[in-house]
Image (cartoon, rainbow over all chains, first blue to last red; front, side, top):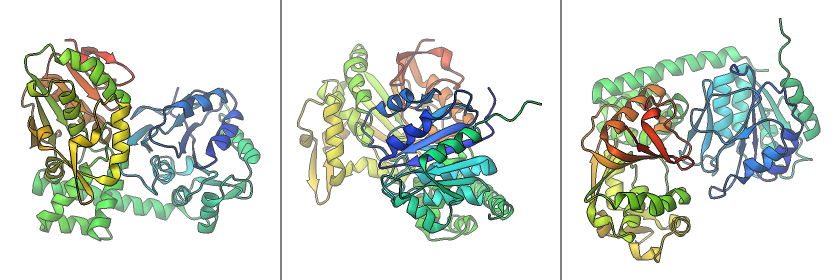
Length: 193
Length: 281
């Protein structure tokens, strides 16, 4: 498999498990983009988050090792207690200090995704009880990528979506069902020549 | 939409400044950070800029070249990793139940803790060895690139506010004692007892340029190489391979592996999930 053309980065905190698993359950088996998830979680819980998500998704869902090559059609979930970064065509992990009191931090994922994938990065900020992710979404936008924010009225916790809207960094504000539709479109393979 | 062109121009400028900074630090002080993984390196340089209150990487470069104290702070910002006592309790539980019995078969045990940062994991290993009655036969060589971080490690100071989490980790890892017997509270810090340091040698060692200095039965290097690029990781793996005794063990962070290290065929997993390997040739 080749390096994916499109990288989708999803960030969520409070209420995120339900929102993320709803999105993942909508993805088809031929989804071509790589999808990275930073979901705030306690550092001491085991990897049950991945198992929960994997049950809802036809694509492989994994907690990557450091410097794992990115593949299309794979879902990479930030391991508890690590920041998840994009570096070239791989994921990288770090145990630097928490950012916005969070590790994984959504800003760290979004900012590195922006640098590595530029116009081909898509940032999606879902429900969240802190402002983590709003700045990072701005980075994705500045580098020419697309930015989507979950409709705060729908979000279980509207703090993160509202922070992004206040910064004016969202290309679109959508509810989960609309985000799922958009993801399916973004994940289509380009037509063969 | 904003224009990506301007952002790219700024980034090109920043890359140039970063390259010049690393060259300056290398030529003036001999510290080579050019093989640090770029994504986290940039975040750390930005952090150093905040600490030094300068607005550009070029301004940071000027400060570092003219102020050796600023350089010391810079090295510690670039190399610190925020670790915890008994980080990953299942790892420490396995050390106790499976690795210690192997170490017991040696008359004398040398352990290298490479990239020990502020020492939390060094004290964790010392506690574990003491409880297992093996500490008196062990010597732990705890090394780090940063003198500042080593000085902190030597003091054995941990903020009291962290002790609740660390105590929980200790218990989950199979600790058998009242954790508070290992430290004394001093203002808002816990000070670990001298007896834990008795067989620990703290010294400066730079994984990027320094050589092997002994032969070890166990090397711990957890979550250090995640900050290195492929080339430097291979170098360090070479160094560890050379430094292990036959059947010596190598413990990495639980999201790292010997895969793609160039040495993967020389190790067998002692526990594949916990990333503990044993040199087999």
